[in-house]
Length: 171
Image 1 (cartoon, helix red, strand yellow):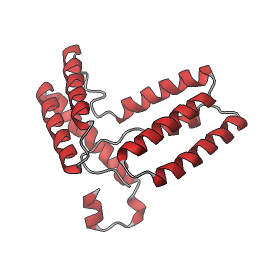
Image 2: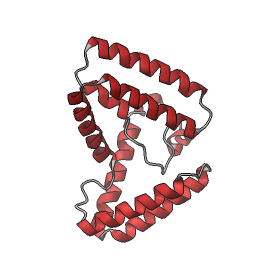
Image 3: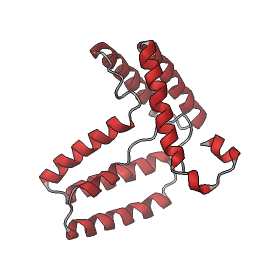
């Protein structure tokens, strides 16, 4: 299922494994883990079940790696997070970073037990409003540009699908 509008997409941690120079044996073990995970995900009913399956799968995949590969994987995941974070590159002050992290932490805590999609969107909206109060006008403008770039890059991936206007609007 595609990303819902207004909900941040998380980086695909499993994709980072392709940059680790795996041996043929490691590749075979990873493939088995992916296939097992895919089967389990198809049977999972709730978001929580899927999250647990993915965490366990990622943990199993980590066991296949050497210490050096695990270190490199952690760095790759950090880089992915920075690339997917629309606040990256805003030159936040130390105080702004603390405030934004506190807002995000509060949002994660509120989201922990919320299953209703509309309620989750409302929490995200409130978080964005609170973060907006922390930013300068210049940072707000840069944030809007960052979000537009991310949205455009996602849309570019679908350009050859001949989507209807309604389908485009839903993305």
